[in-house]
Image 1 (cartoon, helix red, strand yellow):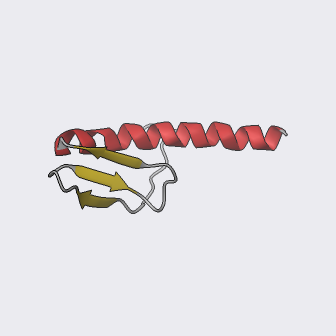
Image 2 (image 1 turned 45 degrees about the horizontal axis):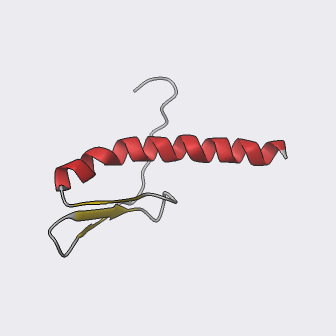
Length: 67
């Protein structure tokens, strides 16, 4: 963990799709919705998606403060 990383705990909701795939969402992370037929690929995408949403939400928050 580098000095810019802050540990966090949040809920991930994992649901099996009718086709056997996986859907992941989180009530704690607005915008986090991942879905795919390849379960391993969906799980692999969780951390990068959370990082991208965090960066996006931080920029959006900073833009609001500048207004």
